[in-house]
Image (cartoon, rainbow, N blue to C red; front, side, top):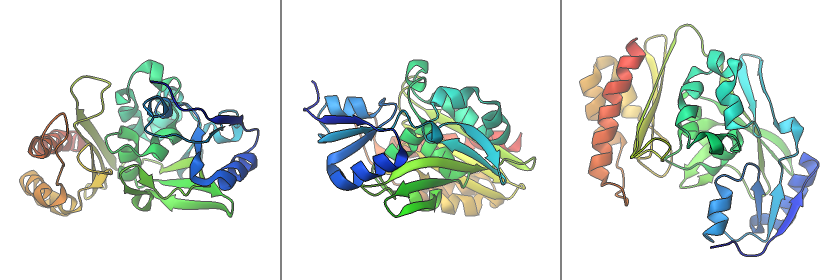
Amino acid sequence: MKPRAFDYVRVESLAEAVSLLERHGTDAKIIAGGQSLMPILNMRLASPAILVDIGALEELKGISVKNGMLRIGALTRQAEAERSVEVKQYAPLFAKAIPFVAHPAIRNRGTIGGSIALADPAAELPACLLALGGEVEITGAKGSRTVKADDFFKDLYETALGPGDVLTEIRLPVTGKATRIGFGELARRHGDYAMAGLAANLQDGKNVRLVFFGVGSTPIRAKEAEAAFASGIDKAVSALDHDLDPPDDIYSSGAVKKHLAKTLLRRVVKELAA
């Protein structure tokens, strides 16, 4: 299939993008890398009246460290972040997860901001953002605002982004020496979306964030498992019965997904202890 007809504008400034989005509302879609949007358009799961191409906005690209935060511009390609020395040093959880995102050809075009903004519940990077306690910068008609990852993911493909908003930057707290990270996912084959995945962040040997993906409508913090973590892995695994209620899908049942999540927790805990 091919998409329905639409208008297309390649903007030259962030202000122009915001103006177009405000004017057209839900009839507009942003395109950057297009690796998720184009299949959606081709299958006619979305039929916008206009595409707003922000790909030329250099101010939304790049990786830097400032005020204890690793800052990644929304238009930074996933492949660039994968190769980045700064990402490997200051956000090793992100560095570990990016190679699991689809395939190299897709990572060469796909953007970090696009993955976060789409908020696919089976995607790796939204879960990592949440596990690291990161935040996003959003620009709209009323200016810029910062939203913490805990408040960003609302429901299936639904985020704190409004119709006139552009996600401009993500920020991750710089990982310190006392931090341990773990990551794992189980998929039918490498490059597929995960049937179940886990991004974990342990601070000072006691404060842990366990974020599962592929098992709900958003990335899910397993807060009861986090609370039980200090009491041992068996109690943390048992607590997942309260944290997770995965739906059935075309690949597996909810019961299988929960079993996979428990298996991943046991595996990833070994990484946190390393």
